[in-house]
Amino acid sequence: MDRLGTETAFEVLAKAKALEAQGQDIIHLEIGEPDFDTPKNIIEAGVDAMRGGWTHYGPANGQPEVREAVADYVSRTRGISVNADEVTIVPGGKPTMFYAMLALIERGDEVIYPNPGFPIYESMINFTGGKAVACPIREVNAFALDPEDVISRLTPRTKMVILNSPANPTGGVTPKESLEKVIEALKDRPDIWILSDEIYSRMLYDGHEHYSPMVDPDIRDRIILLDGWSKTYAMTGWRMGFGVMRPDLAAMFTKLMVNSNSCTASFSQRAGMEALNGDQSAVDDMLKKFDGRRKRITELINDIPGMSCHLPVGAFYVFPNVKELGLSSAELQDKILYEGGVSCLAGTSFGAEGEGYIRFSYANSIEKIEEGMRRVRKVVESL
Image 1 (spheres, one colour):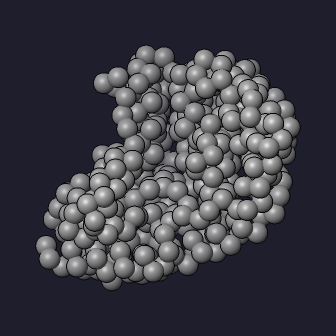
Image 2 (cartoon, rainbow, N blue to C red):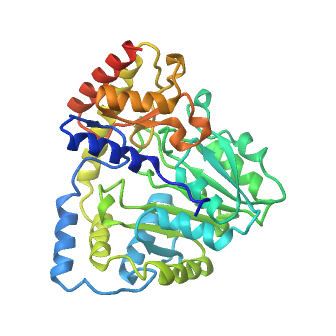
């Protein structure tokens, strides 16, 4: 258990909630979830499913119709052909990375992961006894992955490479050409797996298009695609995710599901099927609002002395540089929370390479974002 890490966003959220319980007004820019309600057609499908008896155990790997819907969705969005036997439905995004590590990583195996990056990558690598090999994600590259950084870290002990684009916490998007260079380098290493975290695949701006490494047929059988409903459809509380992988590994994921969760909630799966197949206008509207917030928060941050912020092109986060302010990321995070009433996350919540940065989620209203940045400016000016 000492090897298992945590997700700081939930710890900071708890601190913020404690302050609210004491009567303090807190603006929440810390947690990584859309502030929008789940679209009505999806809620209605879930309610209808509960009333229709979808409240019992289902297959451990997901209901056949839902796996078919996911296979069709991935085929459409990635431009490949996916079969239902390659799909496993799991309760959220984390189980896919959790099961991939448990199934494939032995003690001493090396896993290359993005840093700063989603903290559960490093946590799970350490938990399984693997060696976490940090690959820096640099502001100078607009927070896109530099393929040479990955390639230079490959050793005979490398067992897995984790890719994440669009990325948390930076909002960075790695160009197709860069991902192709990584994939090309891995073709000569049939012992290496690729975990492609594409949970933010629909959250792109400024004309960027999503590219999935799964399109390369020469390496597809070693790729595990991670995606789900939480971010795209504002369904974080429904606990719905999926993995796409070759069928023999999917069977191992099913065995892990049997030993842990039994199955994903049956009514959630019916709602998830409606999300993929139903009206997408709510998603389009949400992305349009996120786009406006993205531009506004970046503009406001860049107007604060000592802070600078790259305009992200994916997800719903900004990752401003705060090195000029003279405080550690953790010190600044606490100062902004306790003195400014704004909840954000230190860059080091996402790995050592995050020092000198903080993360704001712009999954909040323009009004709250503007008030939040006014408070942050006041804290910074008091330093």
